[in-house]
Length: 154
Image 1 (cartoon, one colour):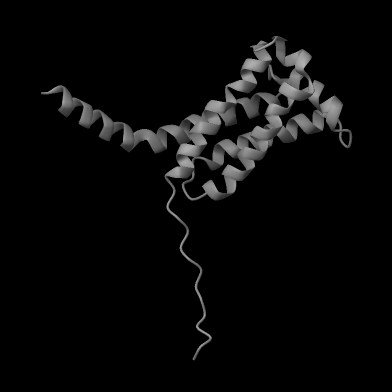
Image 2: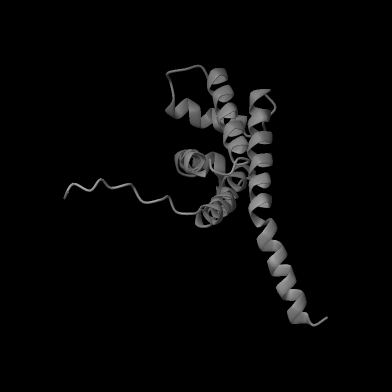
């Protein structure tokens, strides 16, 4: 078998599994990390708490972290259902926006020096990979059908 033939077969294989692999990967990360928040074992909770203390004052932190965990679990679960992308992707992007806030709002927690993130900062920056993966999923969606137009000329 020629290298070119192997290349073609691998590309076809990866194209075939890319959608399910992306969805399962997103499910695992969001459901797992959300579940850890829900049961009080998330290593991200202290960083979330510092941002929470500076931004949200209308609910107790234990309530907020449970809601956050549930939202993350829902995001993960929705990626398992083809057809839910138009609902879950905007929710995910809103969530991603908020996860980047500590880089700017509490830099003492996320940067050890210029362009050197702390472990918490690295945890946040890796979300760029999640965003890229979601963009790939969105780029492979079928367009919505055009709206039905009522002919008013007759």
